[in-house]
Amino acid sequence: MRDPNEPHIGKYRFIKTIGKGNFAKVKLAKHIPTGREVAIKIIDKTQLNPTSLQKLFREVKIMKGLDHPNIVKLFEVIETEKTLYLVMEYASGGEVFDYLVAHGRMKEKEARAKFRQ
Image (tube, rainbow, N blue to C red; front, side, top):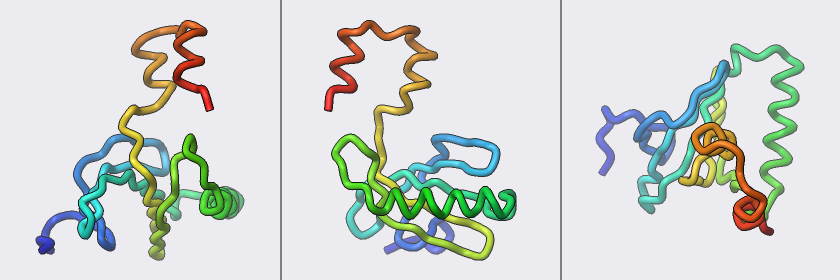
């Protein structure tokens, strides 16, 4: 049973913030019925101009149609008047950019192993 005081959206309970940008943040969350961890991108629509908002919805439409083992899956979109929540597969390995900042340049052999499709 969900505690109504815990931060949540729909059937997802927020755990912690794992990323942040100008108009959005990404939170690690748990799907309450299954216990599955997901990443939820929370986008403040009020901060976007009409052109950016249009591009965002086009990107979401494209993401909904993608199904590939090497692409993060978009499970669900929850929209309110001011906010768009993109519920996505949680990739615990993190961002490639963050890896490069932490470890420096990647050797070709290592890159081939990580990016082989």
